[in-house]
Length: 193
Length: 69
Image 1: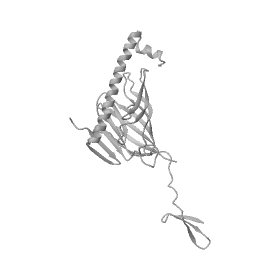
Image 2: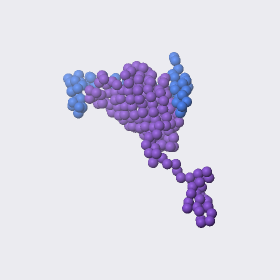
Image 3: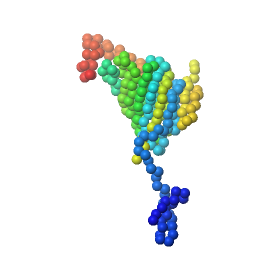
């Protein structure tokens, strides 16, 4: 017979006359529930909003969901930066307007993720997936977003890219450009299995 | 000029304050880049229209040539 004592973190085996503690045993890992787990979030305010301590060793990949984005002026771009890094953002975006016009945008050593997260006075929404922000590896991201433009502008965008450094990030900041923006941001971690 | 405001959200704690010097520098770097991007796009739009005028076709017709739906 074998038991695990949670108060002593030890495994004991009954050898027909007494309990014998096994040395070198460790507690079993806590069970991980697969799926996404909310790790932070809140409402945007002012010119910028920082979400601190949302990336950690618990998760390698995250999803950031922007909802009900409402700009103070006709078009507000939201710029995403990891930590205090304002250089080394690379990638590319494609926008397809509702009139079918296709536009491409390159992000070449940019200061932020500057495409795909946009708002109008009538709204907008975006999802950003992020891999490796906490790990000392390059951080990769994929963006899919749209604002509520009906005038034929290329205000939707999908794209992907990476931050060309190996910094471990715990936070990110959303900065408004061309006005201010209100809205809700929720950050989820993809549970490791 | 009014100092830009920043909100810090750390768990359940929300702090609204003026940006510090480092944050303002980062803010200005990003604003400058976005403005430069907008200017470049505007210049590209003008150049595109000049080419369309030279070819005597509309933007929609050009999109057809380029495979747009």
